[in-house]
Length: 480
Ligand SMILES: Cc1cc2nc3c(=O)[nH]c(=O)nc-3n(C[C@H](O)[C@H](O)[C@H](O)COP(=O)(O)OP(=O)(O)OC[C@H]3O[C@@H](n4cnc5c(N)ncnc54)[C@H](O)[C@@H]3O)c2cc1C
Image (cartoon, rainbow, N blue to C red; front, side, top):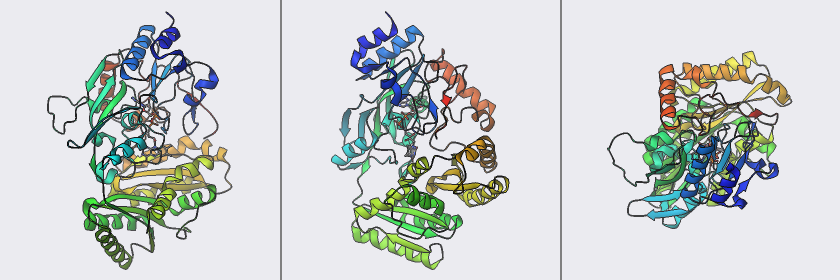
């Protein structure tokens, strides 16, 4: 039977898309940097159907590209331009299978939208702490496949730390049931970690058992203006010292980021002047009462003002005000997209190295590229910066992107010199695949290839992502 007929027999004709107008939203990435072509987009409803789809693809030798919410930023969920791949969308795989409040776990299917998982946990008075700006669209499967970070990693860890068990369809169509809700399980290699952060190259995650935490009773948010990045590191150390685990987020943004949000997104009101310097968005989550949290935050900020770490500060007095402060931070990616894009670097560094890295790298970039304007923000608590480079107002986008490779090389070399990583939370995908060999040791790459060959010997599971293959990569298009 032809593959398309087989796929239709498994999931129903309504859930196999082949017409270009139907496949279009799935074959271009969020930033519109990569476009591919798919033989078909298939939307299975349960694990058994995913397994049958993957088996059929194996039988016909068709590559498989897993996709969740398609919010990834490195082209990992975009098929290549060969038109041979079957894109498996997990969006209908969206049931909450179980919540165990005594074990503090939730078991969900991979296509569950992250925000829905947070809500399901909150309905049972629990916190699922993974939180990022794309949470209304991204899926748990995508979060695990990219080992997503977000704004609460500082306190709760990234997606890897939140996963206790997985269910995975392997490249040959077998189902590995590793859905265990155990915090201790020393029975050999911890296989789930192979699939977390593998960007869909080793199998399709179909479900996960995740850790839950007590729901904080109070959350307080403050936006502080700081003279420089060194003071941000000092403020974070002070906040950790005073608040310990109650400090659940510490984000930084340069003034240029807030200016971009105000300029690009109509209706934005900045609560503090943003002519220069840096801004920290910090959040305390408390299990006692409002008075306890408020006293802690006020004492912390008063000491920071006195020490000259903070120039000015606003504290949200309501949930609405808190959301408004968070919107400023969360809107930065949208503002950049609105402005036409820029050269992105999602990097990790030791927190202590960040001020020196930014000062030295900004200076080196400005010396070589007169038009450059850094737009830098990130999760300072995790040493993760989005060290993005645009042009000063009036610079044509073509000028910016004509220098993309040279800018990336300079930045990535500087990251390596500071013992950092060229991908903190977005992954490698297609965007950084060809850079990886320059920044990862030959031994590490050999081990990764050995794992890939053991699980996917014919290289059909998301080929051309993370590790290079002979397959052609997706076409790069102009709009960014
Ligand atoms: C505005 C915005 C803000 C963002 N902020 C953050 C942030 O703070 N932190 C962060 O880490 N990321 C962030 N991201 C990136 C993105 O949201 C995350 O990478 C997210 O985890 C991707 O989930 P998704 O469901 O959209 O995955 P997709 O984009 O669909 O896929 C991403 C990768 O995972 C693979 N994949 C998807 N589902 C599965 C599955 N079930 N099994 C196996 N492989 C699978 C795909 O093949 C692809 O390689 C942001 C993105 C946007 C647009």
